[in-house]
Length: 431
Image (cartoon, rainbow, N blue to C red):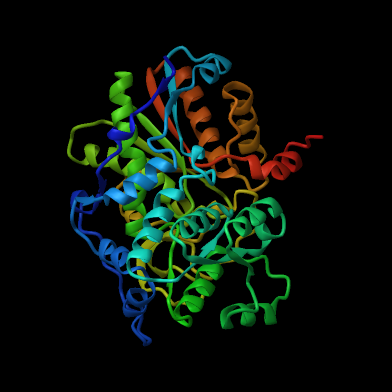
């Protein structure tokens, strides 16, 4: 058997919040020396329930029944596969590989898990406009979807270098009725200031976040929804790992290594943190590997310190592994990984030596070659970001096999690559 499914009734009724189980208290957000209060600003622009969850120390947070129905409509629970064909392709005898298919969401990525939650809570609070940033475009598409299901409007600030080439994903967002701006844009003060210095600025997630925060703060009925990094996002994404734990029970197996790509940390945290909780309680032995780009290796070359989450310094200071909130990062096809900092929860766990990380060159040849192996073996087309996890998993599998070690690897396939085919064509020189 190579596929492990849960029934809709098996869908978790609670999200998992790892904060009570961390090896030390999570360093709280801090105010910079300059006013006004960034924490009060964040409280004002975020969805109220999400801000409450952000500060929660409760281990289990109930998922409303209506939201569980939306999850089921969106295809949850999602399957776990044993990668038998990939194992044969790699000539593995000691190593078993599994992968979780988050690409099967309506918009093609794991981002729907928190998009639906944030849209649902915003509608309950009578908000009218959801405002956000997006890098690879998956989060912007997911929030557009969530907004439409909740009869809300959506405004997306999209990193310009990706906005310019992902035309079909832009159309996808417009199909949901969203307004999409290339970032930096002329819509905000932040964007206009950056464009005045460099009219061809490729943009970054840090800039797009600043624009979204500014826009949300100045429009009545608008709230800002972030797609990664913050605690409440990782809480919503925990549904991935909670499902996967049940599926490994069905498979009568357990992972020795969990691999996922990491930019800010939402899909990595989603698959890893429920398992990490078991590790911290002494109930499981498992390691965790984050696959990154050398364009933004925040867990590898970053410093563990307080920093802003955005370029314009609207956000509170968060303790994270950071490259600096104003660092220049070259564009890559897997732009969802091009963020200057990792989530505070992920950063603390990295600081305690509980998370390993690897970074791949910015030409991305190695990761797209791994994706091609995966396509030829398993048949699914992964997103560029997910391909980093596939590359790292293949590398570790071959290493374990050479050493004669019997290991089980679990990969989170965070999204599909149907709207990334121009990148495949360019990087792999396909016709």
